Length: 129
Ligand code: HEM
Image 1 (spheres, rainbow, N blue to C red):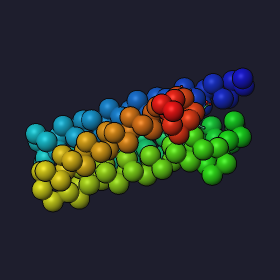
Image 2: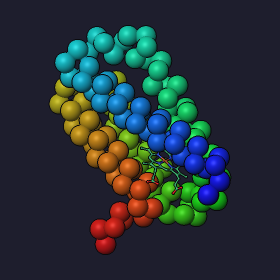
Image 3: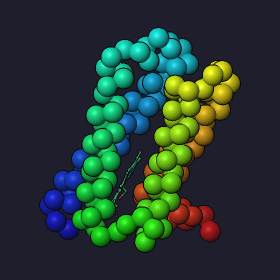
Image 4: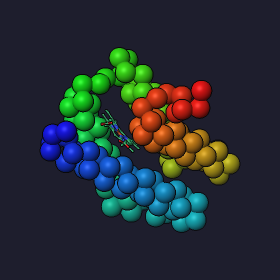
């Protein structure tokens, strides 16, 4: 295993941890202190982290020569990422009622859980079948 791979993987995992903590923090704000969602750092920092997350994931993809539509775990991972973004945006921004936002939050967390499981097990069925 090359040291670049190890360094990039550590970096990717750091951005994964940060993005999850920031998402949980923003979800708590949405539920109990919505005006906090407009704080400048709360609007800016997640974009920076998510950009680094995407870049490091893409870098890893090229380093291990595995690609979406070729390797099904990566297709599943990116599909889950898309769902997480859609439900996450509904939960934190676009949902009109508290009920919609709560339901979207639940689905965002389910998508995220599946995403992490797929990343670890490298299988779309996450070892269930
Ligand atoms: C919220 C988004 C993401 C999460 C939660 C996430 C999570 C993870 C985790 C937990 C691992 C380590 C798996 C392990 O070896 O135990 C990992 C590795 C990896 N991720 Fe991500 N990731 C995300 C986004 C992405 C994106 C957007 C890409 C590609 C464009 C990507 C590509 C990869 C690759 C190629 C690996 C290395 C797998 C290996 O070497 O075995 N990830 N990811």
